[in-house]
Length: 151
Ligand code: 8DG
Ligand code: MG
Image 1 (cartoon, rainbow, N blue to C red):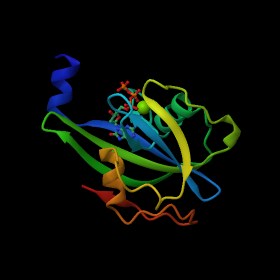
Image 2: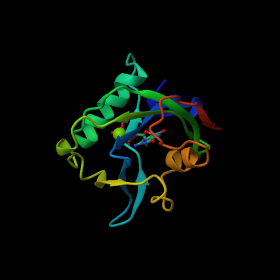
Image 3: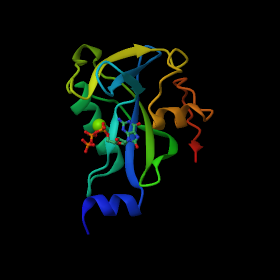
Image 4: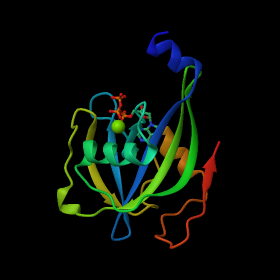
């Protein structure tokens, strides 16, 4: 069975990373057509054979150049992009180890990465980020993490 028909039959597993630095979160401008964008978290598909935490570290490094500290699984979102395009995202919160490494690694896909408060980014959200915002999740850098979901 081809990838495309498999993807339409079953949801795909994805990761999103809530990257924290000094009480701010890293948001990217996901490129749409021409100068339009939606706000996104770094993330993407889990590769076959890869663990979710490794996928989150890989996606963050590939897209932003950043390395992460300990990962905390904080939320799961159910993302129905269309009848044929469905993903489940595991959302990990982690601190950024060295913000000086930040770089827009894939300018064709993301116009830029910006440190913002969680509340600041509320409009023009990529669906998985909108679903996460619908939960009670707050990146409050707590010692205890309470799992959130948006199904
Ligand atoms: P590919 O599409 O080129 O194979 O993967 P990628 O390089 O990681 O592309 P991407 O567009 O960054 O991510 C691929 C998909 O991952 C995206 O179309 C939908 C899915 N995805 C989620 N949740 C999230 C999320 O929170 N952030 C990002 N960037 N992608 C997510 O399901
Ligand atoms: Mg990606």
